Image 1: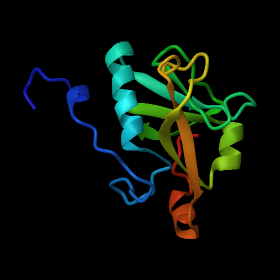
Image 2 (image 1 turned 135 degrees about the vertical axis):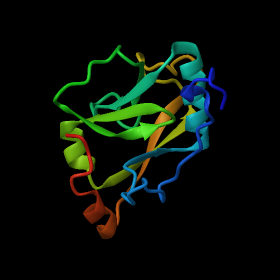
Image 3 (image 1 turned 180 degrees about the vertical axis):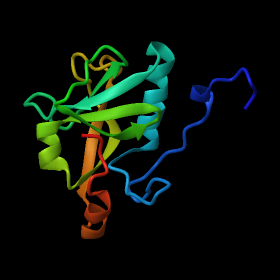
Image 4 (image 1 turned 90 degrees about the horizontal axis):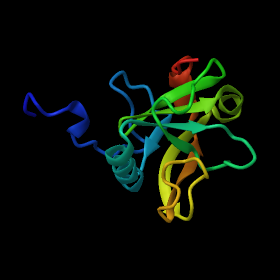
Length: 146
């Protein structure tokens, strides 16, 4: 990478549910190549973006994507990790329900949430999930910024 190129210009490699961080801790949130591609598209248009999964009645399996700074993260939110250079948060109450669940961000046909950046593109972010194994749950104990 040249001295003038920004770190954001580096190609982000897709991650899968089976990957772990450098310390061997399983990742709580990963993304499919389609999701990483849409994140890059949104970042090129809006700059840095972030995700929030509230678990409310209307957003269920669709996290909301916002420009960084447009959604205020508070004490009631948990940082699950980063995908495609975007931080991914979940409400604390939803984390209590999903803390044993690996979340994989994907893209499906449809309209995004009204305030989510992908709205109007005829594709939307979608959550796929699986339960962590007992060993993964043990490794994850205390691994989130609460």
